[in-house]
Image (tube, rainbow, N blue to C red; front, side, top):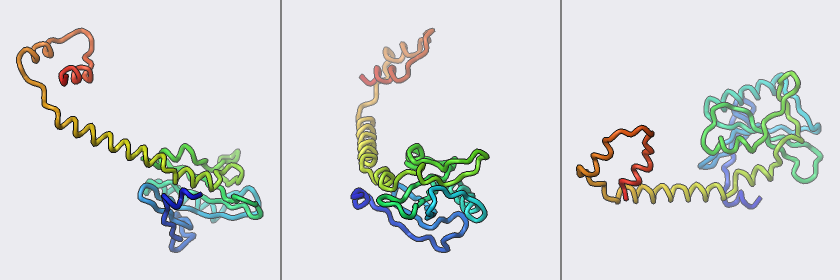
Length: 191
């Protein structure tokens, strides 16, 4: 749980909480944003119907419109320890970090007839979710990747261009029967 201190979110109670598609909370950070709908029950399962089903459908619509991953936080009353479970609202157009997270966060389970519901036991524990989104491992890899890209760009633009002598151009103009490996040819010309 300490990880959230080093990679915190700004969490705001959504104005007009309960309005269609907004959720109850909005968790923001430079690389992630989640609208979150909060549900609290004594039962392990919560079947969506009526207003709660409309809220869910609105979360799907807004998630797809804004390319966000809406979440549901389900608290089971009377449970000692981590009583919160996290569920993902399935949307089709995620990209970047949200697309990576999509694989790890469980979606809503469905009934036999295809209706979604909350089953507390199927959700991701809150401490696991926080570890996932606040881990510094992904950010270090991203920073390292950016450093490697910058290094390659610097090397690419500082190396001299190959000469254009006739001896070098003629072999390249001869067509062969086998396909040309472009990357190998570029490497050969650079050396």
